[in-house]
Amino acid sequence: MKSFSTLLVVVVCACTALAQERPRAFTGAQILPVSGQPIPSGVLVVHRGKIVAVGPSGSTSIPSDAERADVTGKVIMPGLIDTHSHIGGGSGADGSAPLQPDVRLLDSFDPRDTSLKRARAGGLTTVNVMPGSGHLLSGQTLYLKLRNATIIDDLLIRDAQGTIAGGIKMANGTNSMRAGSTGPFPGTRSKSAALQREMFIKAQAYRDKIQKAQGDKEKMPARDLAMEALADVLDGNRVVQFHTHRQDDILTVLRLSKEFGFRVVLQHVSEGWKVAQEIAKAGVPCSIINVDAPGGKIETINLSLENAKILDSAGALVGFHTDDYITDSRLFLRSAALAVRAGLSREKALYGLTMAGARMLDLSTRIGSLETGKDADFIVLSGDPLSVYTKVLETWVEGVRVFDRSRPEDLLYAVGGYGAGRDGGQHMHEEEGEWR
Image 1 (cartoon, one colour):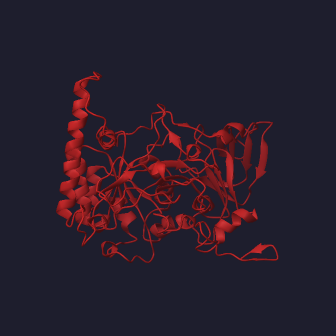
Image 2 (spheres, helix red, strand yellow):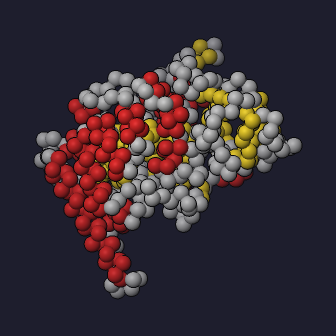
Image 3 (cartoon, one colour):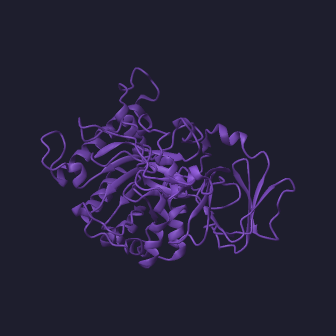
């Protein structure tokens, strides 16, 4: 898959620049680097937002001025990457048209929304935040680092040219068909695909005019924000994050991708297991959701917990997502555990929570594993990441602790009910200084 991971990703974060003047060393934990074998008793050294050393105790150098944290008995692994989230209370396209590529989640995301705190409590450090799926194209997504921040600029990930990292959200199936609609939305699957094809044909013509103009302002077409976004898709600069469930809808996405040459990540793919060979042959990654009690949508009736195993066995790249609140961000580790229960290997499950997502977001040189030179994004766990008894104790983003379960204000978002991490009320009670 073509990637921008060779580009140096430049991140704007004032707090990180001031943090970690001294190295910090975590010692004694079992380290799961994902990029290599587990280290039973390891050392992780971070400095100024980066990993500077990782390896076995006794053979890994620790700077003499390092602050040391003894985490013996704990587990450290890379920060979790959610390739499909709806935290931040953002919105996308409106009801005026089924295709709105000019709409940016950037302009509606709330960085102060408490759902971000809940995500940090679940060990998430990087997220692809999307608008909804009620449109054939609902807008531009955002790839964000879950730093402590109060403005959106301090969460953004940018490439070397300063471009904000993100994809574009498309969908097919019943969500975007809007059954019974008398407006501009399609009433059938065939019409959905036809409208998407028409859109890309217009985008090709717009891009061709720009290329033929060769910088001559007199020959340039009138600026069109929607077509600009789609030209980025056609040029491979923006990945299509495509909501799709049924096996026939999945194959429609593959046809569109092949016809117009755009890169795509399949989102959800509830029936991916039915067409796993076709997906693998196309070289298209799958970001899947694992829920233990699917319902509410006829398209998900054939969702199987063996989806990950079957797709992986066919040769497809498989990662996981929450679609938060469909799966609570705090239960993201469970997604991988359910896949292991259904036959996926432990190694591939942990990879699916981390490196697979990094690859899908074109950030694999930066995040997804514990390796020297990568961002110091990691989590400290109380035990095995796939155990139902394990808790996220700490979450670190670029060497800054953004969640600490030992702090009462953070514990609120880790254990609270539906209201915790949802603006408008928190379902918690305080008695004698303890949250329950």
